[in-house]
Length: 163
Image (cartoon, rainbow, N blue to C red; front, side, top):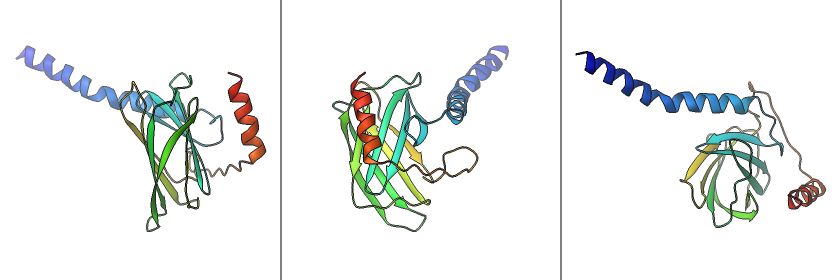
C-alpha cells in the first residue's frame, strides 16, 4: 500500500512539472521588455518575439537565456486571423538572417488580429505559439502598438550583422 502511495505521488509530481515550468517561463516573460517591440511567448526551448505590421511578420527566435537560435534550414508557417469572424490567411515564415524568420502577404494588422506560428528548426522539435490579440503586449491588457520605420529596420539589421 505504501509503495502505491509513493508511486502515485511521484507520478502526480511528474505530470505537474510541465505546468510549473510553463507558468515560470510565462511569468518570467511578463517581466521582460521585448527587444524589438513585439510580443514575447515561450514555446518549448524558445522565446519567440513576433513583430507584426501590415503585410509583414518578423519572428525573432532565442533560447531561454536570450541567446539567438539559428534559423538557417528552418521552416515556419503563420496563420493570421483578423478578429473572431475575420478573414483567415496562412503565410510561410522563411529564415532571412541569423535568428530571424519573416513572412509577407496581403493582410492588415488590427487590435483584434491573432497570429498562430509554427516553426521547425533543425535540431529541435517543432514548436508553436499564439499571439493574441496583437494590440496587447501581454501585460495586464495594456495596449502597445509598435511603429517600425524602414530606417529603424535598416539600423537593426546593421546592428545584428555586427554580432
